[in-house]
Image 1 (cartoon, rainbow, N blue to C red):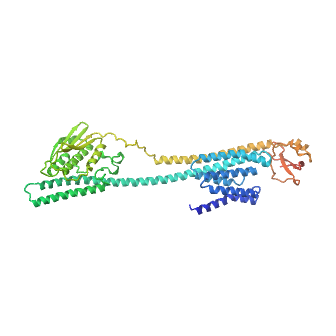
Image 2 (image 1 turned 90 degrees about the horizontal axis):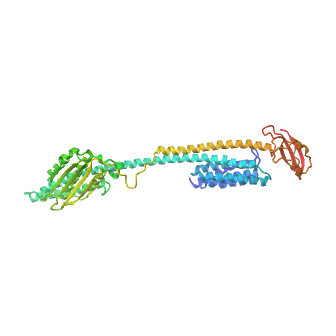
Image 3 (image 1 turned 180 degrees about the horizontal axis):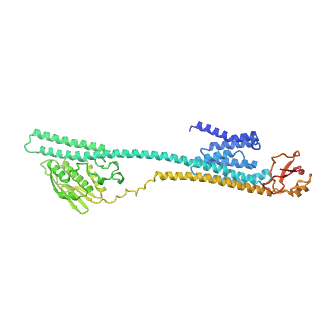
Amino acid sequence: MGRKAAYLKDVLLWAVLGLPAWWAGLTHTLADRYTWPEVIAGLAAIGVAVPLARPRPLVAMLVTAALWAGSVAVRGDPTVFFLALAVMSYLAGVRMARARPALLGLSAAAVAAAAVVPSVRWLLAGRWDPGACFFAVTGIALFGLVPWLAGHARHQSLALTRAGWERAGHLERERRMLAEQARLRERAAIAREMHDLLGHDLSLVALRIGALEVGAGLPESERRAAGEARAAVTAAAERLRDVVAVLGDGPEHGGTDYGGPNHGHPEHGDPEHEDTPSSPGESVDELVRRAAAAGMAVTLHGAHAEAGIPAPALATVRRVVREGLTNAAKHAPGAPVTVTVTVRLAHAPGETVVTVANAAPHRPGCGVTGGHGLRALAERVRLQGGSLRSGPADGGFTLTVRLPHTVPPRVPPPGGPRTASRPVELDLALARGRVRRTRLAAALVCLAAAGGVTAFVLGFTVYEAATSVLPPAEFAKLRVGQAESEVAAVLPARTRIDDPSWPEPPIPPGARCRYYSTSSEPFGELELYRLCFAGGRLVAKAFLPS
């Protein structure tokens, strides 16, 4: 909202809230006409409260509560400033998030009114006026507390709506994030297939070409062509590595992240049930035969043990064999070097052990040395509760993997167990419950205030009738011209009313009159005795029938 628009709204609100004061200053249709100092003081107080309603709603509400209590203290009756108190209280309820400061503020205002208003009435009217105290306190309850509760219910309803939109935005962002993760997992799956299938095949192709390159009786020109072909295959493997790195979102993940960017977290996949990307019918024996057909000297021990390996572990066993054969072809290619690879499957109850070992080559290989395949394989084995060891051994290289047949329970990630987020339905139910409780409290306060007002009015009427009776015998003894001090000795503590609403005899000029009951009946026909005083003496007495 612009500053100019906010200023115009404040001016309009001030005019609306000040309209009853203008009316009371210009006419006495609804109440006795207000003096202009009273009108100006009320408009000034409203002018202070309205600008504070946005930055300091509690202060604005307390300013109007003080205006209400002060006006009651001056006039002794309910005043036209109730509208300002009600509106400022409602706005405070809408704009305040916490309830305690407002409730404490209104309570303090009511206590202050109960203490100050009777004292002001005593100073201004010269008598104790419990009715003014009652009007001040109940006005703060009716025109302060009840509108504030209604505004607070509105605040909670708006907060519930905002929370709903925020939750919807969060769910939409989460949906997009899940879609992005699915896309990344798909890219990682493509990278995995390229690494496992093409990488393995390119290694075997390079091995075959290397065998031709060192073959006996091959002309020099064809030997050079074979060397160029082997170099081209090696370069193709390098380019494949770069593509795998791009698909896997960087070199640290390229071709290694078999579960996408969230691999390794149990909630983002089930790697132990994931099959290899190779042909479903390619067993360990077939992998070894393919490598042997490409020129690799490879021996397989324990081929029949494959039949007893459970499916989740079998998929990983085949991946281990493929990775070991690929690494041997990369790093010990060509002849006259003789490479011996031994694959041993030792099947024991509840566990499978796979070992892929190659002897020391006569010269180092020139294959791609990314090392990503072993890292991905180690993560896969870890998720299945197994262990992987790899490294130089007797001048060669050994890869050993142990896999349990039963996957152990997954250990929560570091940092402690994750706390499940609270369901949306529970949040909505709690918020709606708060709104319902606030509305119920507002209704109960209204009912309690109405009941309290009714009981107080009835009790005050009985009390006023009983304490304002001038007995007929005492009235008959009073004489015009008698000193006011002598008359006061027989008068009751209170007057019944301040001014009758029906016609009465003319009041002597300069006299002030008091009206007393003729009986203690609070709800019957009202008959009054009127006593008028001037110059310290009784100047007129009259009986006023109902």
